[in-house]
Image 1 (cartoon, helix red, strand yellow):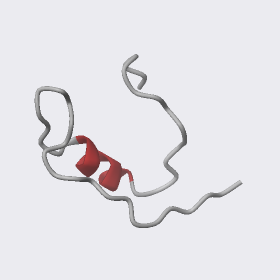
Image 2 (tube, helix red, strand yellow):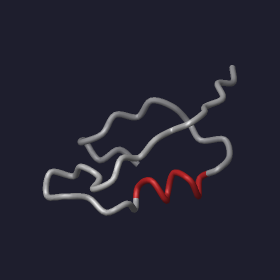
Image 3 (cartoon, one colour):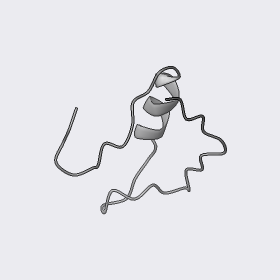
Image 4 (cartoon, helix red, strand yellow):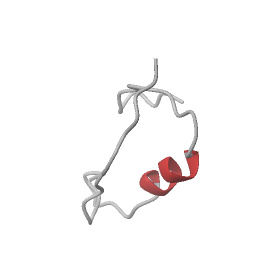
Length: 46
């Protein structure tokens, strides 16, 4: 879903639960996460 606020830059092949967890972290009034969210590894498939 495009909400006209965030850029879509890829497609989730598996692990959508992780995406949901990131999306549901507590944020401040500026939509910034209260605690840093760190991506430790990615896999690019073509």
